[in-house]
Length: 79
Figure 1 (tube, helix red, strand yellow):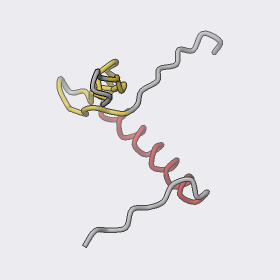
Figure 2 (cartoon, one colour):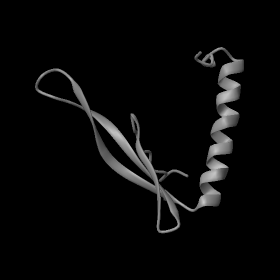
Figure 3 (cartoon, helix red, strand yellow):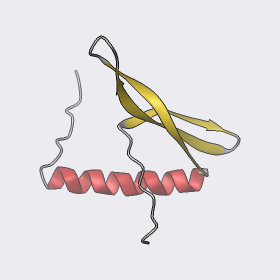
Figure 4 (cartoon, one colour):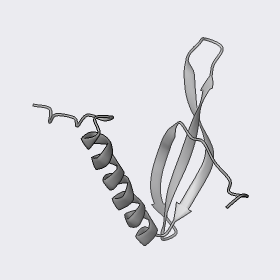
């Protein structure tokens, strides 16, 4: 695992399904001349639907643990 590559992303710009694969466009925030930032696509992550489902389940488990630890708060339903 010494040669493991790390990729940083500020977020996901788009998620779409094409060619029987789920595609995530990862974005990085870039500064603009006016002081604002814009999201620029930097990397595309592509996985089969089963891999997407497994990743989603893993993320949900992590979210639940972060809520339990008080790191995140659940959003209240809007009325």
